Length: 301
Image (cartoon, rainbow, N blue to C red; front, side, top):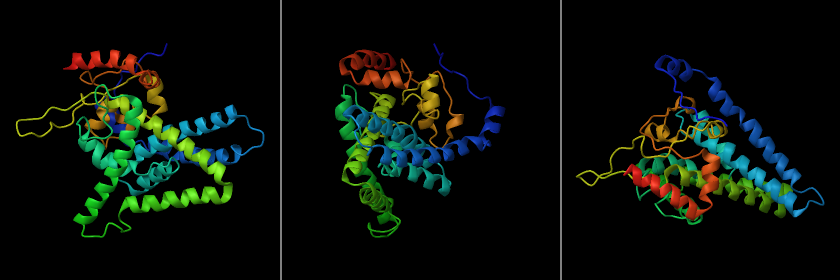
């Protein structure tokens, strides 16, 4: 059995690792995994005489790629201030049909996390399957609102090339049109199915990361600042490796600009009972999930 990893860098190690470009190059390298795998998928899914099980297996596998690389690495790069990093993140998110993720995640989710105003914060006793729909479509609408508000503040029309949602929408249409033109309708539908699976897994990750946690309001009616006890944390190493340390989610929300290799685990962060794979599987069984997690929430109160 692999034990949880509770080790943090000390100040000297953190200074060294912060300057280590290898961690960023690893993120860049995922583009050369995701894009070729997507192209391979588009060809492989149209092979003759595939069984239904084989078709589903290939779609599901591509969906996993969309989650782990397309969305997860796109998320990490989307937090960077460097425009090149952000652009690579946008390419990865485009391969998963989830480009709206960046405007909402950075401008909405990190601001409103652990409040009823956040689409990506699962409420206590909310079922996973309804959360998928609420979180995804609400965050899409909020992404448009955030970008339109930014355009108004900059005294520009909503239909402006600086509006990321306009550009992202055009890119999505062009991308899907190219798949249709070169591979046909059936392959296009298979790819959309893979992207939907990837998005469903993303929303499942959102569900387990924030389920039932709420920030308190102060005497002025404002929510307290985001702390490390407002997201569920996991130090299980399988999730850490697969998701580029995203499982140390409490520290990520405490400091969203911190690079993934520097994220810490601290005692005050609520701990998941298992790693991400186990928690995701558990969330598919609502009665069992509520029985376990509601007791943990009660202990935190």
